[in-house]
Image (cartoon, rainbow over all chains, first blue to last red; front, side):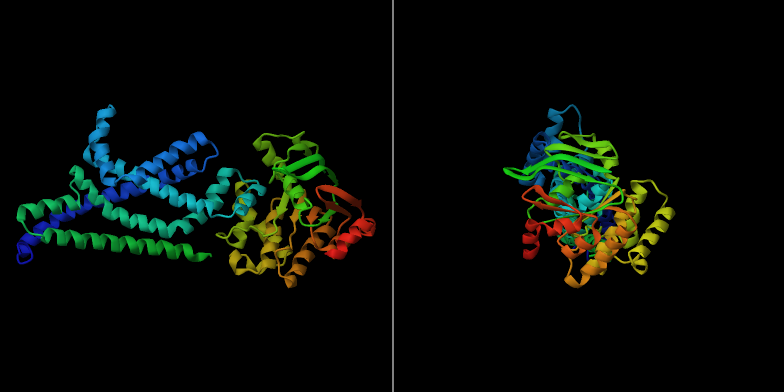
Length: 220
Length: 241
């Protein structure tokens, strides 16, 4: 034992890892905030009547769901700058990769949710003079939110863990810091601390999702 | 006044409405009866732009929704359709909104009424359909008959010139149909213009000023209730009902 029998060293390590956890939290929040609206757009595109919109979006979903997220992260960081005229810093590359990957999953969840709303709801909006957009935002979307909450919760919890993949391009988030300290100290204790931190993070995430679920339980 | 001329509508190979023409005058209650699959609901849906016609003309107050199968632009269509209210067979209330909000939502976001104004009007209408005490309830907490009465109030809230009912009691348990029918009857007595697609023959006979009997996509008989229910073809149909 290198850390657990030495409170001072342990405290130091915890503080370092907490900084990593902050980065992890930033990746997590940014990805969520970006990928949920993007996923909604992708879902709408995937349901478009125009094949010219639908086809590329189907391919996008296919590619993003069928290749490893780790590969996508590396692709965007190492390969994309060779094709496109701009560089991503590590953090941005991770955010972009996670966002487009999660948007693909969210899109399919939202599509399922939107399609599960009875057509009568759209028709009711229409005969009350609402535009398509008004019906979508006022009538359909609030009901979709309730229906997709459980699968979305699953994705959100997975995202907390997937942020660890940012370590493959050396973003200094929790996992990469833990790894670094494991190799320099030849002790697995940093992993144990990281594990506890992920557990607490997701414990809170789960509670928040449960709270939202209760909030949405005002109707059936 | 609603005018439909030579309406044609098919689903694939199947021709559902074959050259239907119909006029609805102000203050009149028109009942449309006929077997399932006769095209009566499709006709009502076409008049409300819930289905697209393939040919024919629909005009309301002299303004054309469709002319020879060509539709007016979306905005114009929405404006014209607002002159009509529509009550569905299965209510289609908004499950995530309470009763009051179901009635105020379109008033505020479509007609631009102030929230308070919309609520005052909504409460008045709820009183009219006998549900003044249920404004805070959610649709799932109401019986089918109550839900349908809310749906009627929701349609009335937009002050339509013509109110359309698509089999308003068909989804209800028999003991709940009367409360809905009596609301519709009350509206007829007020002189509201209404088109009611229904299987309730006694109701059609009693409330309608004019009855239309449809079969296989055409209007077979039309006239005042006595006349239509006296028609041998209609008699053959009503015996089966």
